[in-house]
Length: 58
Image 1 (cartoon, rainbow, N blue to C red):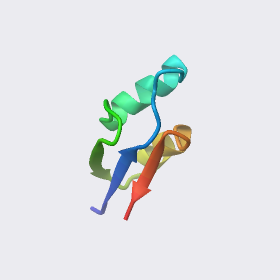
Image 2 (cartoon, one colour):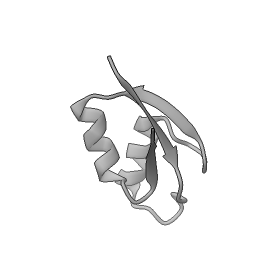
Image 3 (cartoon, rainbow, N blue to C red):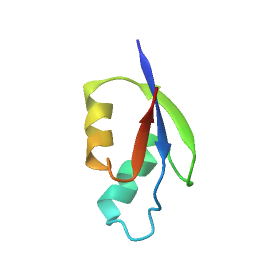
């Protein structure tokens, strides 16, 4: 299956608890960290929930 790379570009310090949990689910724990995840509808939904904190890399 296809994969996408996601990079955390903003801090999680002032984010609500649910958004911090979403970042943890995506595997993002530090600023500028890049993870490669499967391109599934559920993962796309997680990215959409924290779109202001992350960036999808080509």
